[in-house]
Amino acid sequence: MMEPIDWSKCPGVEIDPKRQSGTPVFAGTRVPVNVVTNNLHRGGTPDEIEEILDNFDVTREQVNAVLGFLRRHQPIASVR
Image (cartoon, rainbow, N blue to C red; front, side, top):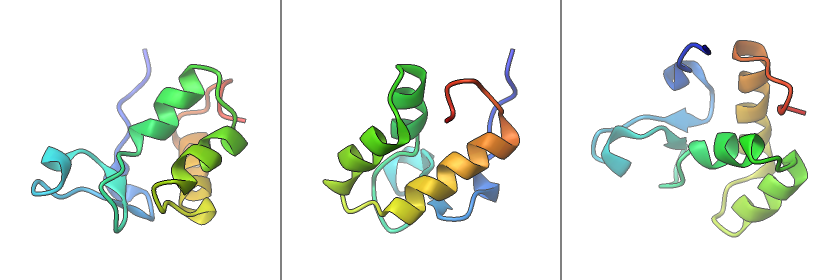
């Protein structure tokens, strides 16, 4: 079983109880970072995720920061 991710240590991620009920979101947005993890677990690629999130003003740098954080803290096969 995988350990929970401590998103408070990920650059570019904010956790604020007043925003999305404290769900970790991309900084400056209301977009939850679980969009990335959910898409990866369903077989999505980083490029596909970036394309989806571009519609919500999430930058490539923000997506890459989350992907890099995942690689360092929860190495799983689906994080490419």
